[in-house]
Image (cartoon, rainbow, N blue to C red; front, top):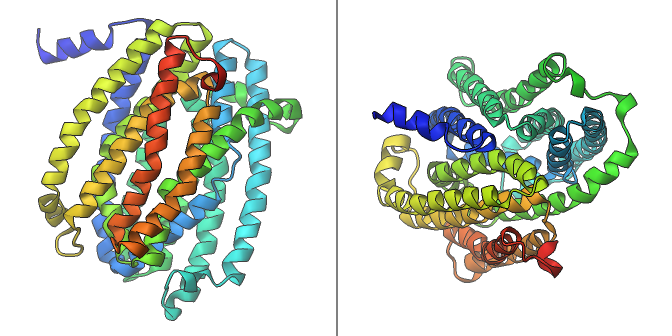
Length: 453
C-alpha cells in the first residue's frame, strides 16, 4: 500500500464526524500553510519598505485598535455555539433568529465603539505615549482613523466565518483568509512603485483588504447558500440575545483576558522597551507560531464537533479526539525545539540584515507558544461543552498578573523584550494547570461543583 492509499484509508476511517473533521483539518492545513508562506513573504517586504521604526508603529497601532474592537461581549463565539446547536437539531428557524440577533447587537456595539475610538484618536495624545516622532503624529492619526473604521467593518462582517465554523466548514474560512493575504501581498508589491516609504498608504491597503474580503463573502453567501440564515431585522429577538449573552459574556471575559495576555505585548514593548523591539518580537512569533496555527485549526474544527458529540452524549469519541490532539502536541515540542536551534540561520536568510533577533527572544516565545497550545487543546472540549465558567475565572486571574509580571521583568530585572514574554509565560501557568483537570473530570463524567461550570 503506497502513501496516498494509506492517507485515503486514514481519512475514511472512523464515523462520519471523524471523517468530516479529518478532511477539513487536512484541507485547512494546506490552505493555512499557503497563508503562512505568504505571511513570511510580506513580513520582510513590509519591514524593508517601512523600516523598523515605522513598521513597529504600524504593528503597535494594529494591536491597540484590535484590542478595543474586540469588545463584542462574546457574541461571535456565542453565535457559533448556539447556531451550531440549532443546526444540529435541524431548527433553522431558531438558527436565523440567532444570526439576526447577533448581527444586530454586534452592529450596535461596533458603531458605538468605533465612534468613541475615532474621537479618542484625534483628541487624546496617545501618539506621545508610544514615543512616536512629532513629524509622524498627523500621519499616524489619519491612519489610526482608517484602521478603526476598517476594523469596525471587518468586525461585523467577520461573523460570516462563525457560521462556517458552526457548520464545520472551516476550510472555507481558511480559503478566504488566504485570498485576503494574497490580495495584500499583491498590494505590497505594487505600493513601492507608487510611493516610497508611505506608512499611510501601506496601512490603508492592509486595513481595507482585511475588511472588504469578509464583507464581500457575507454579501455573496447570504444571497445564495446561506439564504435561509440571512439576517433580517424582523428576525431580531431580544429573547435570543439572552441566550447569546449568557454564554457570550463568559467568552467575552475570556477573550478580554487573552487580549491582555497576548495582544498587549507589542504595546508594552513599544512603551517600556523600544519601537525596534516590536518587529523583533513579531518576527520571532510569526516564525515559531506555525504550530499555534495548527492548534487553532484543530480547535476551530473540533469545537463544533464536540458540540455535536456532547449533545449526543458521545464521550468515547470526545476522549479519542482529545488523545489524538495530545499526541500531536507532544510531537510539536520536539519540532519547535529544533526550530529554535536553527532560528539564527532562518532569520538571517529571511530578514537578511534588516533585523537582528537574540536567541533568548526565540526561546521565551517558543515556551509561551507551547503553553498556549497546551491550553488550546483543552479549550476544544471546554468550549464545545459550554463549561467555561471556571476557565473564565482562570483566564481573568492570568490577565490580572500578566502586566505586573511583565513590568517586573522589564523594570526590575531589565530583561527587555524577553521580560515582556516572560510575563506572558508566568500568567499562562494557572490556566495550563486548571484546564486539563476540568477536562479530565468532564470526560470521565465526574465533574461536579465548580468543575461542572
